[in-house]
Amino acid sequence: MTTKKGIEVSIAIADAAKLARVEVIAAYPITPQTHIVEHLSEIVANGELEAQYINVESEHSAMSACCGASATGARTFTSTSAQGLELMHEILFIASGLRLPIVMATVNRALSSPLSIWGDQSDVMAARDSGWIMLFCENGQEAVDTTIMAFKIAEDRRVLLPIMVNLDGFSLSHVIEPISLPSQEDVDAFLPPYTPVYTLHPDKPVTMGAYGMPEIYTEAKFAQETALQNSKVVVDEVLDEFGKRFGRSYNAVEMYNCDETDFAFIALGSICENIKTAIDDLKSQGKEAGLVQLRLFRPFPKDDFLRAIEGKKRLAVIERAMPGGAAYGPLFNEIAALVHTNSFNITLENYICGLGGRDVQPDEFMNVFTSPQMGKNITVLGVRG
Amino acid sequence: MAKPMDQYKWHELSIGCVIEEVGNAREYKTGDWRSQKPVHDNTKCTRCSLCWLFCPDSAVYEIEGEYFDTNLDYCKGCGICAKECKPGAITMVEEER
Image 1 (cartoon, helix red, strand yellow):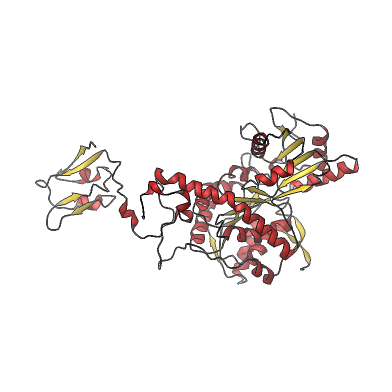
Image 2: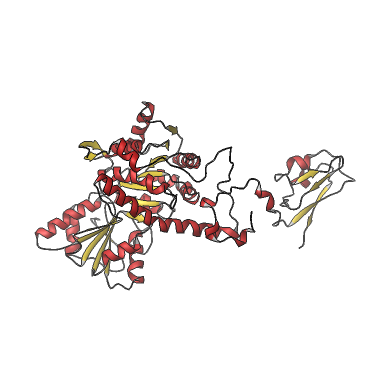
């Protein structure tokens, strides 16, 4: 058991990538992700990690370079935020279609305009269907552990898909937390070197990224989708093994105080800590609320989620992204579809909050519990009007 | 390819649709969306080889010691050869099939 030390979460994620012995890093700095790649560049420049650090001119190039690197069989890492994620958008689909196990720390930030460097989840929600496995972190320790686990999940021969490790900008990335970094020895025992199925090598030429004519495109995408859906099994296995080896257990869907109540919040990321505080405060007033936290968002952990909401009468879906003209927020739409197709009789409410770095205090979640806002519209918490 | 593409089932595809067999693109006759085809008139041809040089698909080939012709398995009918041919020895004609 290693001791905890106070460390900025971004720096700790860079250290986690180093512990994972990444071989290629191609990245372009963007707030609030900068400290991750900045620290990695120092680690590489100081000779502490035998890796290629590729300075690129944009995020589009960063993800393109990551695809090339991963295709050669190198363990590949990058990180981005907001506009950077959108600039790589085109290549995200190529990485997943080519089944390249790239790991990316996505430090979630609001999208311009208005220009904002602050946190919300509108960036990842715009990229949510890009065929990547997506995990959301609640705190710094989880971000470190998830970064290490991500390589093991991604590189499993049953998976071979890229993974986004999502963490909220500033409220996680720039916070100094007591974090326990595992030893190199323990990480090496958990995470063996990556042995790719196919590599780009002149000794055995292969074609990657060939043209898919109408006769084959559907089968190709079905194979990819099946791999993504089936990766849930491997995610569970890796979470389980990590828990046994390192003593910190995680689940794809996490429940907090759910047994006590027929009401639950549903949320992703660091806002879950505020919600838990609200739940504790409600408990002290003799009121019971629960939280169903999605640590895994892609593939959507349908079975685990349905088990978690069984018996619930009311769900409040909390999201840090605007629907962009959709009927409801992106998370709500999926949950509503699952609730409906499984014939649950549950009242659903959709709350948007924490946009562009707006603080959301536990009081606001306590208000959600006591004063439900439902109907055909979303409710934006704290909007002045 | 072990079999035609439209007979592959999804679970028979390699991971990421990687193609391990070298040079099998040759087996795909990519000239089937052409609407016009080039016709070479050797009485006008000066054997300057511009058609061979400009063909973006390398579908024009030289018949050793003679003139040039087009491999219609790969010609897309773009007409660049006809456009570049200075003596006007290549004509694009509508193709019916």
